[in-house]
Amino acid sequence: MTPSLPITPETITRVTLDNGLTVLVKDNPNNASVTLRGRLRAGGLYDTRATAGLARLATAALQRGTRKRTFQQLNEELDRFGMSFGIGAGMETIGLGAKSLAEDFDRLLDLVADVLMHPTFPRTETEKLRTEIITDLKEADEDTQHVAYREFRALCYPASHPYHRLSDGRAESLRRLSLGALRDFHARYFRPDVTTLVVVGDVRAPQAIEKIARKFGRWKARGPKPAYRIPDAPKPTQPVRKEVRLPGKTQADVVLGYPGLRRTDPDYYALSIGDMIFGRLGLMGRLGANVRDQQGLAYYVYSAVEASLGAGPWAVYAGVNPTNVERAVESILAEFKRLRSEPVTQTELDEARDFLTGSLALRLETNEGVAATLGDIELFDLGLDYLQRYPTIIRAVTAERILAAAEKYASVEGYALAIAKPASKGQ
Image (cartoon, rainbow, N blue to C red):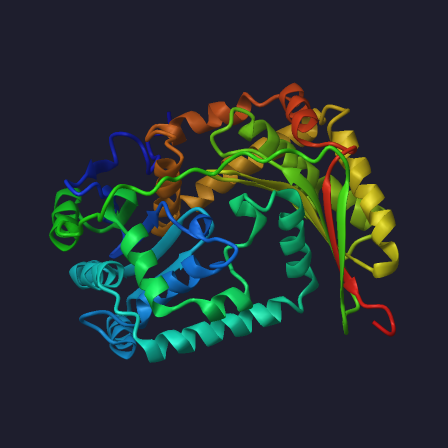
């Protein structure tokens, strides 16, 4: 297809080291920097109710001290050489990002390998970090948008499902986590055979792979690979609803939706394009035009499909005047009903297709965008020819396929609805 595509089978070098670490390299000599992105198949899905937030705290604590570097030394080194590095845990994966000038790539790799392989979890710095995270969580507990989303997830997924919780954790569980628990999490889940590193920039693939093998080749996995599975969740058969009242607030936030689909599901593109028309395109699609602009029922309203390795939620998010909550919910349900009963128009479909192909091209203009796209291609096993096939995939989505996907995943008879709103006087 387009010869200038940055990702094709011919332009990417992919190898797996003897220890199971996967490496993908894209050479870009037109940029004097190197971007490193990484993913581990681990995260909050291994937390329990009692250890909620363990993945987040253990991962963040990796940068608080290593065998070779104190927290201060690590940050001073990053500043001195103009490098950047960060790592964090989500529900399904642990992600890292780093960047340096090409001439400092060896130094960057040494630092990243040190953090991933040799953290020491120093007590003083780790306790400071714990306090910071708990403070953030307390602030989030006072935010109606966050609370509505948290309660929606708890309604939408059963207590036994990882998605029932947020990977952020809760203050009460984080307080109880010992340093030993953090070390155990690292020892068990940080391993090369669940890790992918992507390198994009001014570095030749053979040299990059040799350097990574030198720094990470001695990284060994301990014991069998942990089971990695995110189960499906049953769809609500009737409305389930929860309201939380927060003192001192003036706005209500609403989250309404369903368990969705996986990124690898055959319905993904149809539902994603349908959702774009529904609540994302332009000024937030049909929802923005009708619920917010025409009816004036929301300060903001949009939708999102969280499709990943597991079937994340498909939901609508809205901030409304507390007096308009019920009318806003009715209007959102009416738009769901329309999406699943009437085909989208050809104009809507053409605009969504154009946006998706155009935004991907913009994303690929930077090393960071190419690295992120390569990481997704690897994570979801899309194939290195994915960008070549992408326009055809998007053009193949029809109004009929969108209608069928909406009928399958949306319902006005059964849904999860969470509302966080101001407390009434006297509460």
